[in-house]
Image (cartoon, rainbow, N blue to C red; front, top):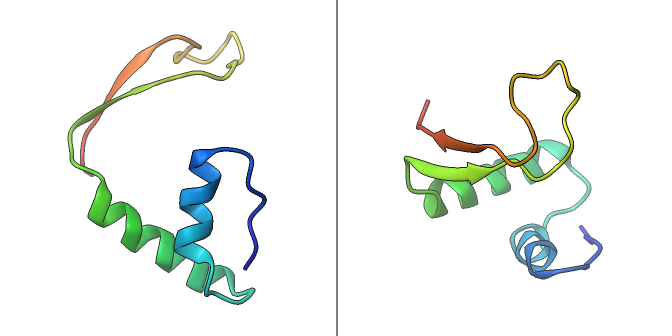
Length: 68
């Protein structure tokens, strides 16, 4: 699968999915395995994109992400 490279994040994604053909389930599984190895819970995440005013999470908020 080919992913458009615009920044370092896109490059990481491409490295994970490069050898996978157009199979959405295999792409999902590969990305899920990558995240399971890389993410350490809990971690802090920032909201950087605009959210509708009615949403209780807003741009600029910091969130603590815990493992489900």
